[in-house]
Image (cartoon, rainbow, N blue to C red):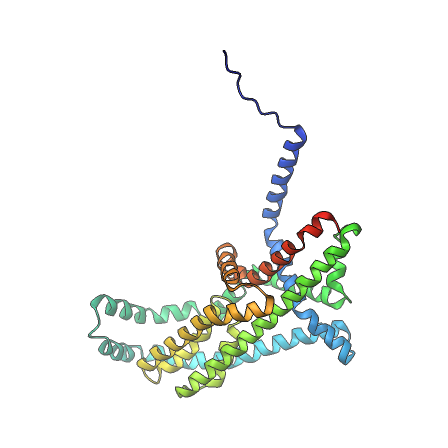
Length: 340
């Protein structure tokens, strides 16, 4: 008996749907930078909306003035920190480069009993300090901090979009309503309100982490009698808001200051910053974010790792609010599917 060849009859409509989905996914890939800007704008708007609402309700301040005041406060704090950081870095870096040979001798004597490979690595690293400092000058730091916005234009776009949404009464809900059919608007607004609440709590959690790291850093540096302890702690608190590279940026000035006390003190301070960062990453972040957004620590850590893999620093920033949003949508998915 002759075997009939297998045939798969796929309806033309199904083929067209698959092609349409693939084209839509490709389109999303092409505009991924725009989607990232919109996502960051949403997070900024959701995080600041409670503050703007309170300024309007309690102090009778128009929304646009409240938004402007918050932006100016952020810019002012950033400017003050930069003015505090730059003189310290210029002074300490200049002295460090001028006395590099002396520090080399001190450190070489201290590690003379260590394995030869370790000595070579440390000595090479110290010799490369001037080049590293030149690469990480203030201009370079600013470029790295704002690099994930793909330029100043994108950063301004985030501020403008967020300001526009925040300046409107229920601006976030109005924006969502414009893209949702009326039959499903109620459930989508319910979901959106919950997502907004989660993002606001996430932002509050970030502030708690920043304050905790700054306080712990100040106490540690004060106990070790490190000069400029308060300023260095403020720097650590602010850079804590920058994922991944933030703790490194915050540690550099403190290590440089400690290096002028002794190479050993510089190593102790570096070890202290590493300890604070590890404690913050593996203990504080999961627990604070769990209480803030109600996510399991494993989900938080996993989402941050995935975000770092996909989008680097920006992925880490978006990880927790995106994971919270996904969880909210999954919980409400039956209602979305039924259209109720």
